[in-house]
Length: 245
Image (tube, rainbow, N blue to C red):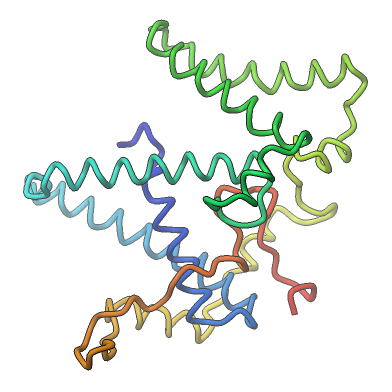
């Protein structure tokens, strides 16, 4: 699993961000950002501690009790999540990938088609190339050649203008000029909403009456992640500041 860089957790991080936004509230963006990144850090440390203890006490055999079809379904779901995320990021979509006519129209715009078609073609070439080329240098070389070829072509056509490339969606937005490298750590804040969220997570679910008077377990939050942008969207980087107030 290490070779995948733990991409399987991305959908769960996305769901955590949506849940925190729903619990804390859209009107508290600074608290939402602080709670989210703190929860990511704590969940990562907790996961690492569990893995370490399972290895130390030789509890790895417990994984064998998980039905195989559940694992396959989970991996398949994560795979489709990553495919959808690829379209969202490359096509510069403001929200999630929708299965409707408006999304199709957006993807078919003349200025949008090259943004997602080129990465899709490169992914297909990589997929079939790895099945035929067994050299361990193929993957890193392929990844390094792509940006080199991109900047060579833009320079050849006299299009090497960072601002225009960003406006066209070809290059992600960078941090503001003069922003220190340690700015990210200033977003951490042990604010009260964090403890509210953690308490909600520990209870796992809330019991609410169903439509027929019966009680059913409700998820503490549902997807409304328009405040915190998707983790994979570097160009939609969350910022804490007066512009959100």
